[in-house]
Every structure is written in structure tokens, then in C-alpha cells.
Image (cartoon, rainbow, N blue to C red):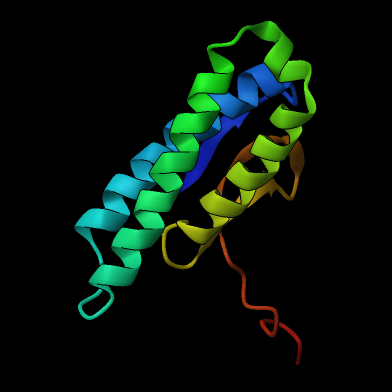
Length: 116
């Protein structure tokens, strides 16, 4: 899915669950569309990501205090990195350039485009 995952918020209690759902979907897609020859490496990366997602989900179940904790900040950083790692080909994960409260997968623009 290219485009918005969540918009209009910077609250951990909104972002973390949305990012967990998005990463779960991306991991399923990565498992189904793994390039030939990279199956073992991809399986390991997906397994590690699922393990960390499980830990995040358990921390979320601990209550609202989690979302104000340092753990939540670390988890959010990990989710950003993982979503970028498993982003659809030709995209990046992050805030939209025109709206810092709109998070999703955006096309990677050629840095040399229009440079001449």
C-alpha cells in the first residue's frame, strides 16, 4: 500500500497501533514476494520483526502508561526503521513532505531529477 497510513496526529497511542498494523501487513507481503535466493535471510528478518512486534503488543496491553514511557519512544523509533526497511519497492516510510502529521509510504524521488 502506497500512501497514508495515519494522519492528523503525533500521539504515541495513535501512531504505535497504526504502525504495528501496517508493519504486520508489510511482513505478510514480504513473505509472499521474497526474491529468489533470499528466502532464508528474509525469513530471519521477518521472524525477528514478528518477535519485536509481539513484545510491543504486550507492552501496549499494559495500559496507557506505556504510551508515555521511554519504551514507547524506543518502540516508535524501531517501527519507523522497520517500516522503512520493509517499505514497498521504490518507496520510503515517513511523514509526508507537505504534512508532518501524515505518515505513510511515499515514492522515492530521484535526487538528480531536474538537476540539469
